[in-house]
Length: 321
Image 1 (cartoon, rainbow, N blue to C red):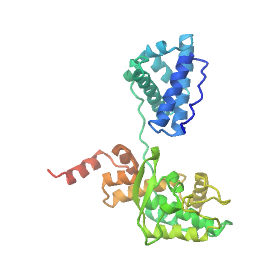
Image 2: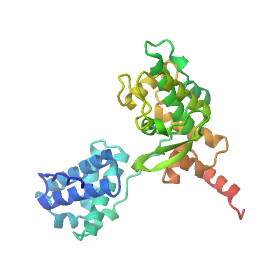
Image 3: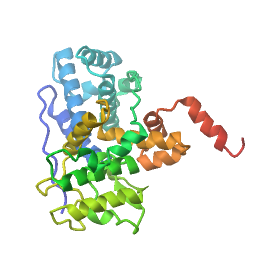
Image 4: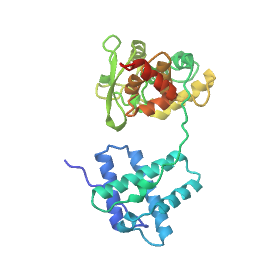
């Protein structure tokens, strides 16, 4: 059965031709580029804001021909307006990326070339390095006994410890850990890898420690609900899907108990996984694969290394050194 067509978008600031192309563009990004619903929502919102601005800026509704004739000064004025609203640099970068994507889509569809968008420089964004946890603290977060005084079911504490052990032990995103099916997690002694579905529905293989699998199996044995092979392995207190927010709240409780800073989040365990591997001589490209990053530069930010470290890896590994 074919998918139903996306409902048409209505725009007060632009004529129906723009709305029609916007609908087709977002459908293309979702179906062909497999962008997440949140990214599509943000791109759509950014384009709407730009069209609203241009309509006021020009004093008329935006048409396809007028949008294709955009000038660099129009885009700079829009970006300046957004910056005046205290919009962060990353949000401005995303807005410009979305506008460029829409412009390229129009060009491919023969609806005009928006040359001005390529003439605008992306705003500079300061690289904020993640704050990894000390190794000892990261290990304690996966110990259910650290929360023994809480008035919560024992199986819930075991579940949370198993999830955090996966985040730190295999470098998973929280969505990846909670998306695991029962059949995808081997019993201790019966396997040592996980097939994980990450961003863009891309799968990758990651190693998993036997002591982490033991923690997962301990939770499975205690869980009061059925865990069918094709269902999620981690369940909420009422037997439904486990929300990432529950793990975030568990982390907040542990922060207080262990005296950790606010930067100690579930995602910080993924940062810690990468940083601790690198500090012990892990190969940067291998860490990139384990994290599921498409770009090595993303891994570089995660692991907090600089260009000197990259050159060091290059100099030590290149066959013609």
